[in-house]
Length: 274
Image (cartoon, rainbow, N blue to C red; front, side, top):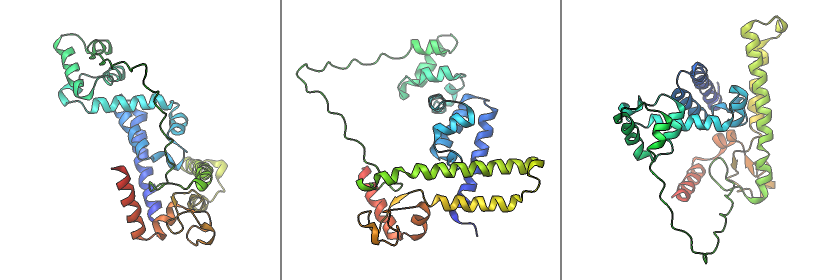
């Protein structure tokens, strides 16, 4: 039977295909494109074939990450407007200018342009952006602010990664690179199968794709997901759960870690977020 991880990935692939069709059309409106990109980014639907959202944007669409973020922001601005005001924003440049206005004032700014009888343009919106309040000057005797401390490195459950394990944790990108390569090979074979490419006439696609799926699942276990809850990454050499590395994969976390350990991690994480 197909495991839970593979079922989830298949569902993610189906949703990714739907969203990418929206973007390719797109191009119908910038709002639809931005909302589709936001969902792909937030749910990490690109992860089967790409190492990160930036790589996905660049390789799939030829867009820079800042441009995609700009589309996402513009779409969110329009989507949050009341229905009666939303229809007045037709271009991304208008939405980008409106993003500079405090959320509570955006509908009022658009309505002010409409009431003036002038077309709703980025320039007209810009004219009505409230001025930024002037902050009081800092006394000359004030001490310079200290830079914030570096953020702790945390695992996929929100648990801090012990200092001695951080180098190994960061090598997870190496495993992800192999996963990306395997996904691209699978994608190329599926394309050849769909097109009935004669170059691949002797290829047993069913066997090849099945073996690649298994290889992908095996390599996935090399990617660290969580600090081992058994040894806490402190004495991994004798630990059978993490097999001496102090970190475990997402598959091992899902299948081998007790419900009590998972609940404890969630409780600590929730407490730290308050």
